[in-house]
Amino acid sequence: MKFFILSRNDDLSNELMESAKTYLVDFGLVIDEENPDIVLSIGGDGTLLHAFHKYKHLTPSVAFVGLHTGHLGFYADWKPEEIEKLVISIAKKEFEVIEYPLLEVTINYRHGEDSSVYLALNESTVKSPDVTLVMDVELNGDHFERFRGDGLCMSTPSGSTAYNKALGGAIVHPSLEAIQLAEIASINNRVFRTVGSSLVLPKHHSCLLKPVKGPDFMVTVDHLQLLHKDVLSIKYRVADEKVRFARFRAFPFWHRVHSSFIDSDLEI
Image (cartoon, rainbow, N blue to C red; front, top):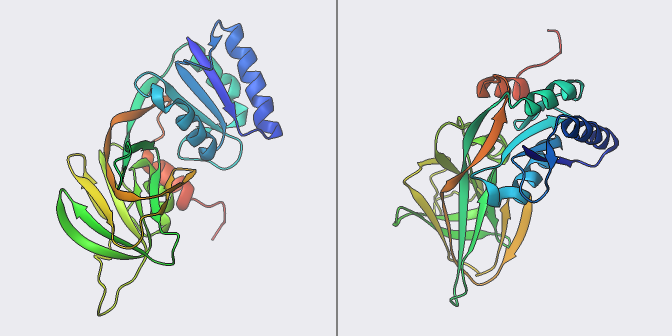
């Protein structure tokens, strides 16, 4: 089996990376940066996002696993003291592969250039370089609303615990093939109205954003920040591709949510 390791590049993460490499090579696994079967991310959820975007073209075959060297993450749930147990499990292929939905982002341009297509593991946001974003929102080809505000955020189920949650969106279990649109500081008064709630769209639905004011937009795809000019429309849908994670032990999603947002060491 072929593997590669990405580190957050701090001292502890780099030390664990070197140890993991040594163990895995001793077990007969091969380091292959170009076409790995499994990618070990050491750092945090941000490190795993970088790993995903490095290998997103290999989504049908590559599996990811994360070891955190900071706080417990939704993607990185192994601890530094478990490094030997983890690499032994990898070497013995003692894991199953689970798949999570991804978000497909298609940006179309006004002057006929080829569309830009991206995959997001967590979310994509759209904001205007001007003060206010004004976008017509279409759902399945029908006009839904004219949005005015700071921006819009479309998230995956696994990304629903990230920026989407901070915006008041729902936490969606990653077994559901869906995407969620959340508003960023919408303007609502007697003149301008939006639905004011996040919208959860199933796999067979799509969302199209059409600019009303200005053709240039700041678009994020996970940690990537991109300025797109002369935008005709931005289309969001559940991607055909899925991200694959190597799961070595049960860690139910709601336990992760509880550990990240509710659990506390404080005694009351």
